[in-house]
Length: 364
Image (cartoon, rainbow, N blue to C red; front, side):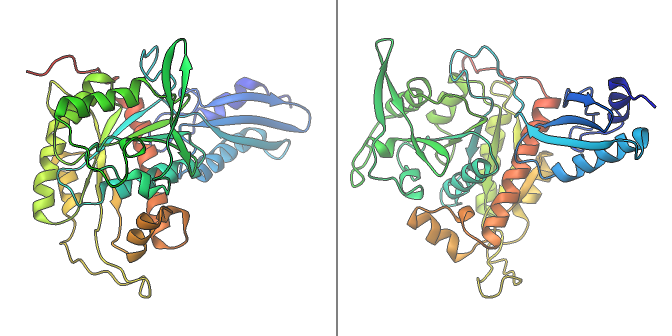
């Protein structure tokens, strides 16, 4: 029996992307169908290299095509990825597919630790990742990436000086910490800090990126407004700890992004320090800061809950030593890897189901 490309497409049109809930053919995820006397081959283009459902999608495709061709042909499937985006013809950061703001209502909830590990986890999965340390007054990334004494290079492009971000662990990084002595304080008024963020966005060579994570300072400030007025943000992630005071502040940060004049989609809530787990007793959980506060916050605002990160001593040690915990073995690395996969999935769902974010023009 002779099989055609249409036969294969018809079979694959019965396979849905588990997250987006549409078939792979209409989503344009099937490419390069080839049929000869011995085999049928095709490529499945996933929405992110950090897809945790890769094996399921591949198996569903194989089973669907097998129903049509039976044992007559060998089925060869190449699984690849192309991160989705709603950004096109952007004057700023034209090669960046997704700009993700990571915020917290208050300090001390581990936002920078979460951001650094998410960035490295996405890079480990094969994504092109950048990170802007927008916490101008308390930059953490130079220490967390073990590059606190490095300085970015500067090159001239069409007569304009362009900063070349530091690259570490597969992540491109910019921080005010690279430009000021480690033992000095940044004593700036709000407009100066906002100007620094604008420079990191417009005067740095970011190139092609799948995800650019923006580590925002705690609270709601000029920096937050500068970001949403400078570039359209794909979405925001809120980091909190379970206790009541942190949830109350996180709620304000979440509400800021949801204001009609800002209207940045909430990709989800992350609950950090969700429970304490001793390294020697990995199955024990002690809820020393309360329980399920972040999950309840996500339910209240009807936004995705991305996951929990345990409080483990090695996370603090990793941050201090400049080797992110996700690069090591153990429950912490696994938690951050799963969190990165969930984040990537939610970004893909956001891009498939919501409108493009508009740059905020003015806030009175």
